[in-house]
Amino acid sequence: MIEGKRQKQVAAVLEKELNEIFQRLGLTMMNGGMISISSVKITPDLYDARIYLSFFKVNDPVAALKTIQERSWEIKKELTARVRHQLRSMPLLSFFIDDTLEYVDKMEQLFKDIKTQDEKQKGKE
Image 1 (cartoon, rainbow, N blue to C red):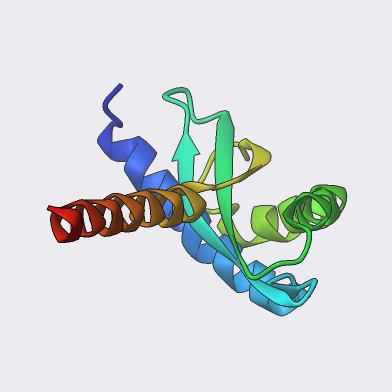
Image 2 (cartoon, rainbow, N blue to C red):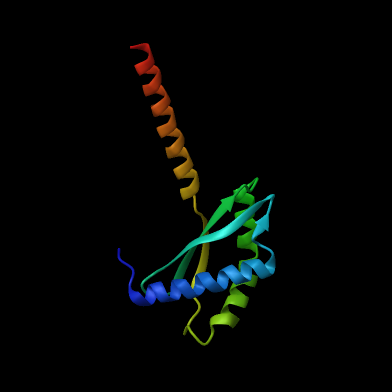
C-alpha cells in the first residue's frame, strides 16, 4: 500500500524526534553495540506507528528491544511534549527489530559461496 503525503510527513517528524530522544536517553548504545531507528511506518489513520530498530553488533537484540519497550512510556511522554503542536493525537508506538541488514549479509554470503563453487568447478574442468 502506498503511503500518503501526510503519513510520510508524520513518519519523518517522528523519526527525527525519536532519534534525538534515543540519543538523550542513552538508548543508542546498548549491550556492546549500536541501535538506530531504520524507519518509521504509520497507518493511514495516523493512530499507529511502527518503529523499526536496527541493531549493529548488539549482543542480544531481543533483550535490547525488551528494554526499549519497557521504557516506551518515557519515550512516548517526551515525544508527545516535542510534537504536541504538530499532531492532534499521539500515535501508539510499537517497536520492532529490523532484520534487513542481517538479510543482506546472508544474501551476500550466499552469492560468495556460489561464486567460489563456480570457480572450483571451472578449475576442475
